[in-house]
Picture 1 (tube, rainbow, N blue to C red):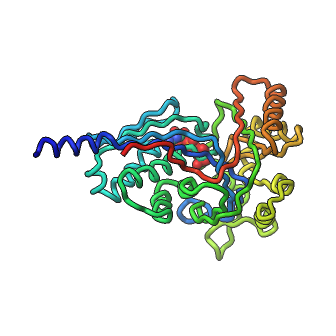
Picture 2: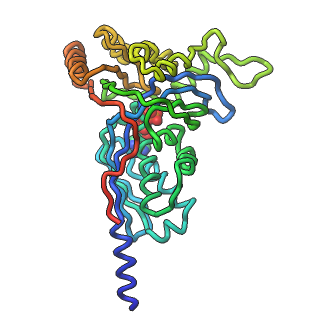
Picture 3: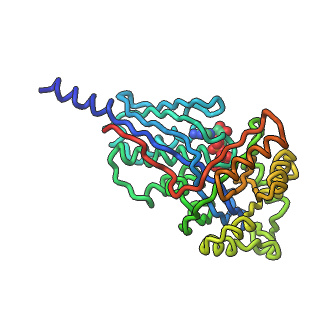
Length: 330
Ligand code: ATP
């Protein structure tokens, strides 16, 4: 009868929930090739997932609305949140599924530092795409999810796949690289410091890319090529020593002179014999170690050298996946 049908529909709408883990990324390599007419830059990056992760809980509701809750005061809890935007993109592309399964409540348990160059927002959006694909039974493959991700941000397609990847274009064209084993990561960030990604790229463009008359896009001088091939072959050969030496980020050229605290962190890691570079547009600096014990020693040494309550340090590890389903209730 009608009443049992509507109860079933309601139960279906109420009951669907997914909990996912969404990993942060670091840039082992970031080279800016040229600027583009769309305001972005063509890049060549080696991206690596680490096991520092946010937890994203998705729950369908009967209200046809999108609600975001987050435990971090700097993360917007409305349409500006990338996780919210990810639901909106899915609802726009799959209106029947949105109508069938109802609205979505998203709860974000933030562990990834915000505005840190670790793709925190992008990985939350990726988790929503992966989670809704399952919750709404859409059966989308990775390519389709990556396309939807590219509508949300340059790092979202990588965050859907994770692992170790070569990323080109804005960062959306991905080629898997052999997984790198056994690295621990020490991450350091001043809580009150953030760097605008747009500022970092614009400043780099003005200072280091050169236009010529026949070519409207500004390109780096050929003599300034950094040779990404070397780090890729070091990864292929699993040569840890070389990977250490070939870490590179073009954006350091503009961020380090402007933010002496970032420079100081980098020098501190260097002094400890543990090479470190900035991730993305910063301000997080990371260093690689071979063991957890060494990572712990580095954390203690940095804390002892720079005793500042504003400085936060984390230990993480390389991981081969980005989005993981923790539990679900269908
Ligand atoms: P990227 O490495 O991709 O440049 P990021 O790590 O530097 O990103 P995010 O942590 O993604 O930066 O946050 C950048 C800004 O985006 C924040 O200041 C915040 O206001 C906004 N934001 C929107 N949605 C989210 C989200 N789900 N998590 C974190 N920040 C978000």
